[in-house]
Length: 259
Image (cartoon, rainbow, N blue to C red; front, top):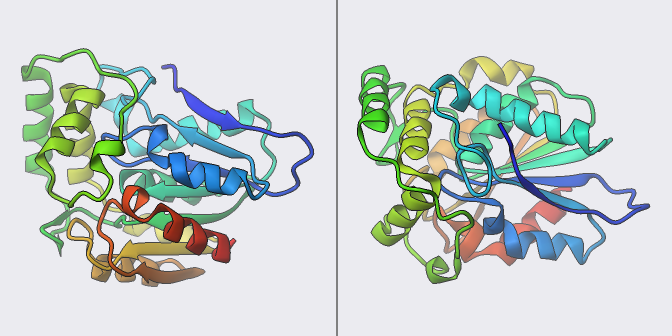
């Protein structure tokens, strides 16, 4: 599986590389404002297209979309680029992949920022545990529906300032990811439970949440923060689940303070 990424690299930079992992249906360009912010401050940045997203391959098998497999994709990129020290920054689905990766205690990983994410599946903001039956339904749908060719990288400008439940953004996400890849990733979310991973996470972690997030409300983020030993929680006022687009400067400033 070919996994693509955008790597901004200047030689002789002593700071850790910032590794950005997008949310479900997104791609590396979702981080455009944040990466430019940190590049202007002397950081090297690496933003990934997760498998099944953006310019990366979209494999057919269910097993290819396990969160642990996606985490290993990031590890392989870090090793390929010979990155010695780095910080993970994951939004939503990308935060879940980050949790898996941090639990592997990879060499060189210094800290982690989790943005608008969760330790378990939720429904309308309520912790519902895992939904294995729903996961099976999504898996069957993934192979029953026709797969349209993905549109590659997304144009996020029309969605800046948008709400959490935006039908047009949802349609755009599905079309750019492919319906099969999107549904398979959703099936993995329905079974997602990171409780058994937290004791393995030893690095300092910042948990950030928009105080108007309705997908993973701040109560979920606060619980997530309480489960990680070296975690700090902060919420950003006046923003929702897609703060990566809606409040990129404020988000970057919080990340910078933590770093």
